Length: 144
Image (cartoon, one colour):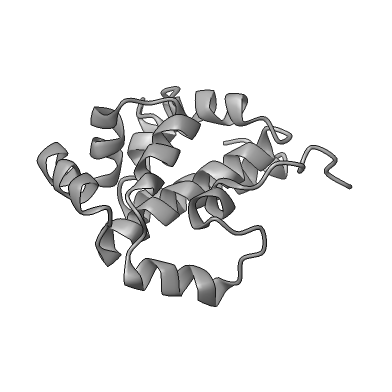
């Protein structure tokens, strides 16, 4: 099935500033550290506050302020940003290309996640994999 709503770039593409992204270019960008604007791009896409994105990325607000001043994130922080951006892109695809619906889905508590939101459940690698699995099960009509 063709997705005709894919006219805008993915969040990953937006963060990296490229319309064609290879796996190796993402890895290189993460290793060298993303620019701080990746944080603000996430905040805007998810429609959350700096405090909420700080919690979701496990980056203290004071640390975020330092990163904003320097203009660059560390590799581990960049990795968490890309992980969350990928999940958001998958949620957007699940919602037929609607970023608004994806953002709402990410911040709505889910019973299957013990009442936690997908955004907060994605704080860890294990939690992120669980969210990706939930998105895939939903996409394929396997409800649990």
